[in-house]
Image 1 (cartoon, helix red, strand yellow):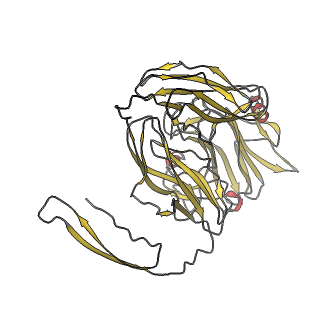
Image 2 (cartoon, one colour):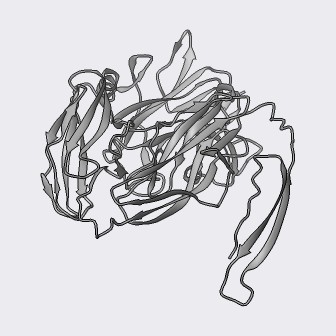
Image 3 (cartoon, one colour):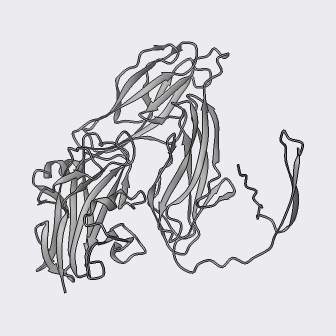
Length: 476
């Protein structure tokens, strides 16, 4: 086995220490003398580009470190969090394309789309507690740092059973796979619904203690727009669970917040409370009504053709998508089409609308837009372009380029670090995506695909994509 010794470089000086390895042989202990020096050095930063830096408390985390950062040990029903700080110490804005957390963990802070130069944000990583065991895995943070994307490091934590000698009830409330912390200020987001359509979310209450848990009926307070639409069983024996439903009323447009409170006989969580939020959108209703014709572009319902849709990594889907390419001519944009021959200097707009798979509504998803271009440099394969909203890239083009001998687009979509155009925390039933606008300035065949990747739930990792996509021939 191996062990690692680090020299703390926080303070200048010469350091010497003895490491003793105690064992059950005649050579116990084995003493090892170690020494090292920390010298002052003026750090000259790269004059351009974003640069990610990450801290756990005041300790800097090294990208790719395999030494786990321990979140801690906790009982079932008592989730814990650890706070991290991300900084951009570069001279340009750093785009953030979301993250991938290992099993048992969630980032419970709203994740930004980017960080300005010399800016920072703080996020909390939560260890969920609905399963007993040791949890270890790598967390990946996707960004536009040239040599640290994704920024990854290992985290660990342990969930243990409650001491059987303590004969108390213990309440646990779950939002699907998220363990809710009582008193948190992080809202449970219902997502966005179309005006006239309600959203209902089911919460699970579980007694992970020993003696019977007695519940009051949950109530809402401090806000509007929400109502309790079904109530839980009021007594739960050990390991029993029950559900209650909360509905966001879709009859009035706007943003709504409230607080759910549930009285009970848990000794230290006798009033279990947490905030909820959601949005009722008139625009989403317009997208719903327009979908029969096409998509909303410039505030107008424009005719668009349906795409053929597949699941890139197997299985079936009931997702529907429409869209295409529109060319600016004679002072206006043309109708959307999915096959076009145009000049490389034409101004274009590519857009699509997604009618989400019924199993993915309300889930966290990444919206992905990719382009495949064949030219004389790659006669048997593709150049792969990620059409992300990159503030450091001209026209948001050529964020990432991958040489491939693949003759179809699909295999490249299964790259684990495929950057997203944007992340939707709660996928609505309908979503319009502006994929690319501007001038391509390349010659040859170009295919553009619209896709989304599910980031949570039973279908995590599933990619839904147009196939074929938009087929464009660009002329000189």
